[in-house]
Length: 70
Image (cartoon, rainbow, N blue to C red; front, side, top):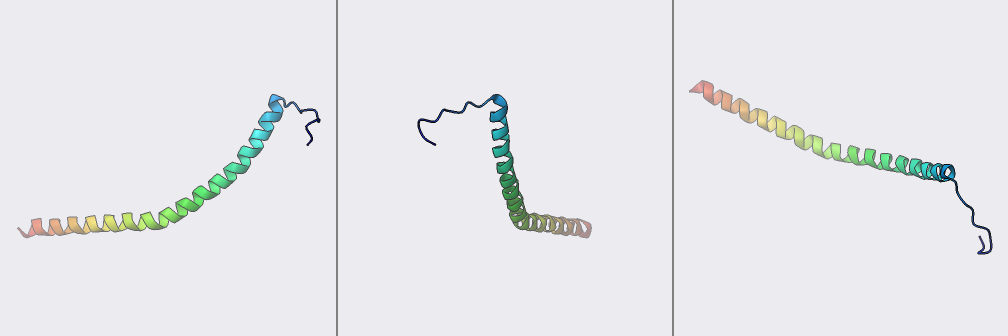
């Protein structure tokens, strides 16, 4: 584009259309990255949480056994 070309004036509708187009493309990327992050974190965090729950249940079961033995 040369400096001598006349500048194009955008209407609000034109601007909104361009912004919507850019945002929709970026949203696809953001949603893809969020899903990848969720999948990655779930694989790590679910195991830790499950192990914690199992350990707490085992401790509680052991405490209950000791109470009954008294």
